[in-house]
Image (cartoon, rainbow, N blue to C red):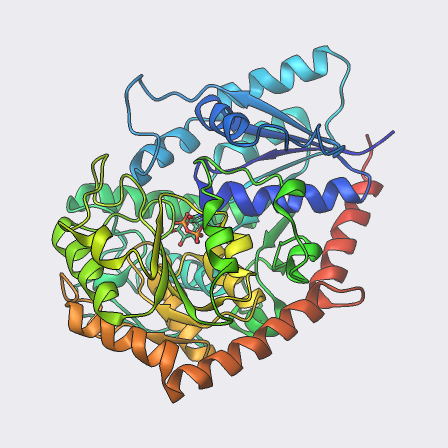
Length: 466
Ligand code: UDX
């Protein structure tokens, strides 16, 4: 019988996108995939992919949905606390779905769920299905979380996961992290941060009991940071389609799991720009910057006097309807293109892109590097500080100066943008980004480390009883 994998992401773009890329790989290996989103996200994906859904493209990927437990009207767009609530309470809805599928005579070979979906291990056990954890962030973040949780449970670091803002924690092979950069600091409220750290502990414990932990990372880049006494993370990244990595994709054959409408007009705009002349600016899907910071960023980009493609999400400053400074559009229209959401993978693979001012979300980082695009590193929260330090260590990006300052001033931003796009320092990180691109291409081609790991995983799944 054909193996059947049930895939469940964390309900946020940065987790849904890479899991869908894994789904495509599995489907190409003859595995039937059922991809389950929350109802809210499922509807958005359908709306934004008219004519490009897996069924339209002949892919054996079925999209299904389950309800979440959030009350109506709650923020399902950019609130990490809400996302956590959804994923921590997803168990009963998932059981209902499995009951329906099995009542219809279907068999599920394996459940592949986001590492943060801790309840799914118990669900899988109840039905006698193996659970595989999918880890979208970096291998370095996995190592940092594992080390920290281990130390906190041993009592050598605070059990509530909190440090003084300037306290420094260091683990082997990893960049040091100051207390104010800890990934679980998502709110002003200490109780919420402690609660989030509690779910991090649970995540790492449940990961360790899963059959595999598949990571969107590359052995040659991050294999050495994870010590052997932690459950092995299997690097299968970058999880992008090979056509994309060869810069050969066309919009028509890409099903993207986009939750927002992609403004494709930016691709035509890029066609009219000189090679490597455009700075792409995006802070990802959920980061919020306050109005002062947004204003400084806008004026900095204006002062940079470069061709710029800037993603200004409608909720980038927290509320709907982000306002640009007065007269900004008129002053910058000659050389700036602003969109509310871009087809980012296609943007990054465009020859006009010369650099990327990024929040260091791991997908954005992997997508850019797999195209050889150098980075200006401006982490905002969560795992992004660890990612930024890791990327700086690899030599593929320049850091934003005074990133702790709120707001980071316009002069700083303009100066760093200039260095990346126009100066020798930018040339150096661009050359290194190209080296990393080649290393990534090698990892996913036949015989490469990620290719082999994925093959081993698929063979394991095909050998499971179904
Ligand atoms: C979040 C965390 O911030 C990140 O650090 C973690 O690793 C994953 O979850 P997010 O803010 O969504 O990520 O950033 P990122 O991981 O970079 O993912 C964003 C995704 O949205 C990327 O796949 C990117 O291609 C896509 N995107 C972004 C678009 O398609 N269009 C855009 O305009 C912006």
